[in-house]
Length: 363
Image (cartoon, rainbow, N blue to C red; front, side, top):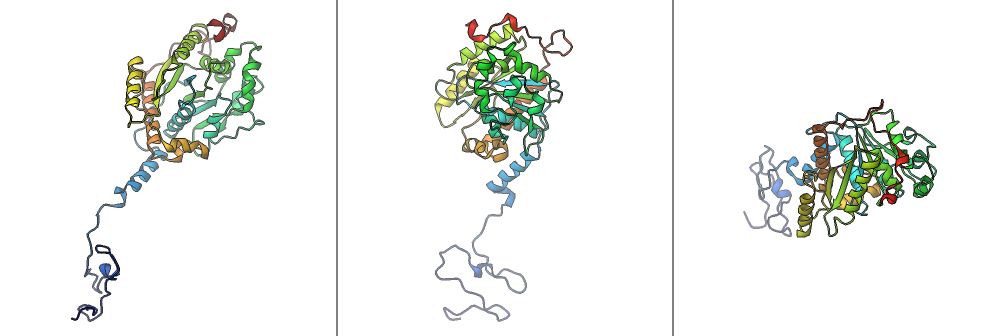
C-alpha cells in the first residue's frame, strides 16, 4: 500500500484517515471507526474507565440530592420544644446566616421549625424568601399586641416544615414605643407561649445590640446560641452579652442558659483562625460545636436569591457544614431533658416585670 492511500478493511471498504492537522494523541473519527462486525479496528489512546458517578460534578450532584431528599442518618427530634435565641452584639459574625441555615437543615431532616426575625433589617426574612415590606403583618404588630404570632407566620417555599415570622422596617421604632408599655420585656414571651401550632424548634434572630428587642428574645427563650467569627477581636463584646444573659436569668428568665457556641467564617489557610478556635474552645469547654462554618462564597451569595445556602448549593462546603452543625445540635438536644418548669398550668416561667427595670438600668 502506498503512503497516502486509504487503508482497506477485510471486506475491501476504505477506512477513514486521521486528519494530519490534529495533534498527536487526540481522537478523531478514524480512532472510533468500527467494522461491520462491530469490532474496533483502531482503539486510539486509552481513556479513564471511571463511571459518571465517580466524577466530582456527579458526586456533588449526588450529595445535593441526598441533602434535599433527607437521606442519610436522621436527626433526632427533641422531646420538648427548644426555643433558641441567636445573639451577639458584635455585628457581622453570621447571626442571621446561622439562624436560617440551621433552621433549614433541621427542617429538611424532618423537624418543624419556626424562625422569628427580630432584626429591623429583616435579613432573615429575605434569606428565607419571605416578603417583608412595610405594609405586611409582622413581628412589630405582635410586640405591640395588635396581632397574634400565629397570624403573621408564613411558610417558607421549598422547605417543608420551615416557617418564618417576618420583620419589617417598622421594628426599628419598636424599642422606643415599648419603653412606656407594661411588661415591655416579656411581650415576645407571651406571644411565643400562646402559639398552638407545634414546633420542635423556635429560633429568634436578634439585632446586633442589647436593647429591648434582644431582651425580649432572651426572656422568650431558654437557650442562647452565640456565633463567633474566627477573626481578630472575636471575643470583643462577648463579656457584656454574657453579663446581660445573667441579668435576664436572674430577674426574668431563670431557665435561660448559653447552650451552644458556633465558630463561623473559619479559614483553614490561616493560623489566626486556628488560634481563635483554640481560644474559644478553651474559654467555653463543652459549649463549642465540633463543626466550624468555613468562609464560603456560596453562603454569601444565597441570600441575594432569597435562599439558604442549603437550598442554593446543597453540596457546597457551607451547606454541608451547617447540616453537620445542625446534627450536633439535634444530638445534644436529644440527650438533654427540659428544665423543670415552675408551678403553673402552662409549664413556663411567670414573669414579674414590676421587679425589673431593664438591663440598661441595672448596669
